Amino acid sequence: MLQLQVLRNQKDLVLAGLKKKNFASLDLVESILKLDEDRRKMLSENEAHLAIINALSKEIGKLMASGEKEEAEKKKAEVATSKEASKQISETLALLEKQQHDALVQLPNLPADIVPVGKTPGENITVRSGNVIPELYADAVPHWDLCTKYNLIDFELGTKITGSGFPVYIHKGARLQRALINYFLDFNTQAGYTEFQVPLMVNSDSAYGTGQLPDKEGQMYHATVDDFYMIPTAEVPLTNIYRDVIVKENELPIKLTGYTPCFRREAGSYGKDVRGLNRLHQFDKIEVVQFSVPEKSYQVLDEMVLHVEKLLQSMNMPYRILRLCGGDMSFASALTYDFEVFSAAQKRWLEVSSVSNFETFQTNRMKIRYKTEEGKMQLLHSLNGSSLALPRIVACLLENNQTAEGIRIPDVLIPYMGMDMIS
Image 1 (cartoon, rainbow, N blue to C red):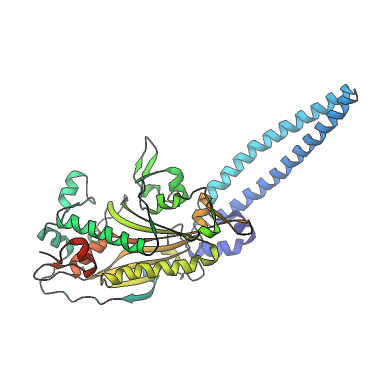
Image 2 (cartoon, helix red, strand yellow; image 1 turned 30 degrees about the vertical axis):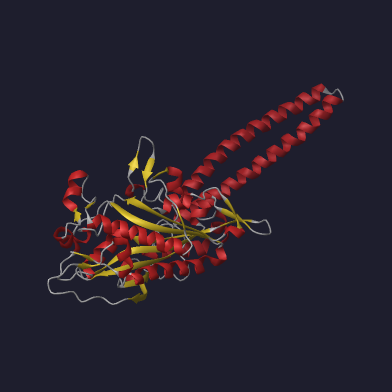
């Protein structure tokens, strides 16, 4: 959530940032500032009434002590009038504050200066790429055919049990999932991230804290009786570990990682781009989250991008890194880098990770602060990234490593798989 003082003091900057993010309701800024002006006037009025009450109360005490009861009663009547006025103002203030908050949470985060202008994915900027796109043998097929051929994943069985987008992993397919999860977690913990195992359902406060509510409620599975949400990413529970926590400066940076299944309704997704593992309602993902002091957060973002890049390099996956334009960024992000890997059989790039800096957008909602050595309280910056999402990694791994004899396992995964070939 944007900080109110930023809107007050830097309105032109806010409007320019919202335009870069292609936010349509720019008049919302003026509405929020008008509500803020009204609220502050009401606060001043209330403070004036409270000052009157305080002064009269002292007078009443003196009058009663000197035996001037009649005059004291008059003052008591004035106190009662001011108390009633203060009560009415407090009720109005509560309403104004709610209206202001409800409007404020509709504003997306402001983009960083280096975010490119644009509305569509085609306007994202390629930062760099790596590893060689393989030349496949003549009879190469897409991953959904490989899954059938080697009995790795049964998409139809998942549809029978639940519905489309809920695949069943079998034998070596299940083993490959487990191998990737363990390798990714080991890679992250060796880089200094602390592993957590977190709940797969969160309450509305947690979903609000990371920006899923009120922006993305339609994309989440909602257990209405208990008002719990199935997590769309481990980012939600991991970041909320520090909700309402004051961190000491010497405890930073904080680095968390965790594996979870993720659940997304993906409403409106259909066609060839969602075939096989390309888009699922349930999938496995390993997440990395960091909290940083503001002046170091973009250095931390660069380090997280390098971390994910090394992970892809270690598996010899052809990849590219994109800096997202304003119109392609998430609601909460200030700067996002997407990682895509090349699917040689499908001949297309598939997104496998997003690494983002949210600055104070999430920490302001969750009141995640740190105390400086001088004792000053400040909001932290939060960052997160996929490290990595499994479905499209699996799709590209199967497709890009297929041979006439079977599917080669990348060297780094052989100790986890216990085999060097799926055949």
